[in-house]
Amino acid sequence: MQLTAGITWNPSQPGQAEETLYASVGDANVAPTTRVLLTSTVRPSGSDLVQPSAVYTGRNLVRGSPEWAWSLTVAQLDSASSPYGSPVADFTLPQVAQVTGGSVFVHLPALASNVSPFPSMPIEMTEQTASSAAAPIQDVVTSPALVDQADASSASYSGSSASYVGAAPGSSRELYYQPQTLMTTETINGLRPYLQNAVIDSNLPGNGTLQGETYVWQATGWLEGYLSATEVSTSGAEANDDFYAGLAFATAAALAVACAQELKDTTRSPRRRRRRPDSPPANEPAPGPAGR
Image (cartoon, rainbow, N blue to C red; front, side, top):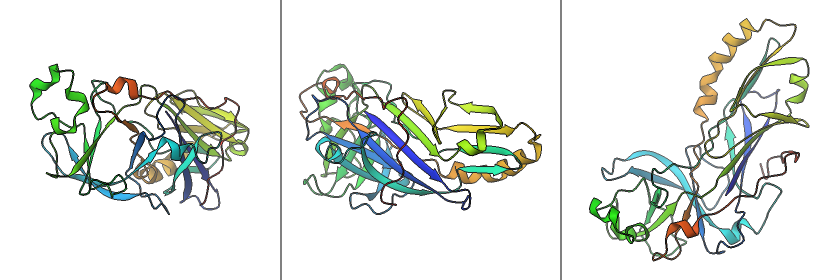
């Protein structure tokens, strides 16, 4: 599975950034009807597939902050592909980059898959009031808990949604699993002019590179790109104060995207349903935001 966040930031409008999220499945053996679930703490714009969802956690069914949740089939992802996959959502983010006093600061939203301690167990469970696959997602249960923990020793527990505690009795449920391999990429456009005479002070996760006009980070799993650079002729001390004052805006933009795979055949081990990503070409420039 591959997730890519392409972010465009305009220096003349520093308080606003535009992001397009792309997704692709790199395993041709994955059934076209297999569903991918995505959730976000930031509201996507202009998508008919998005519904605000109540979030619960495990056995305690503690209601959390509402998230936006939607699902797409592999066939839908394959219908309109770019070098990074299909565009699946657009977002308007608070300030994620600043250029102040010769220094450059970038703090991108978080992009990740939920992590399960046991790969064969579901990491998400959706519930809806109707049995139709097109029905809105009513609830999302993160790290769903087994009704009877003794079932964990049984080979059949992982494929049956009835084995898990639900938030909405009588609703239709779907289990989702962590992809076997997840490649995440974050790109921010237009940084080259601000880095030509600068020294990189901090770069997380550490593998960020400038590709054309775009700065690119990649990871396998959780990714939250961060960059700090200071112009050679500038001390940067004053700029640091300005940045940390605005960092709260970037932090508020944290985007948690959970991407998991529904078990199509509940009698089959979820290990056989996971996806493998195709890494984007190393020198491929990031695409601009689509439809924003």
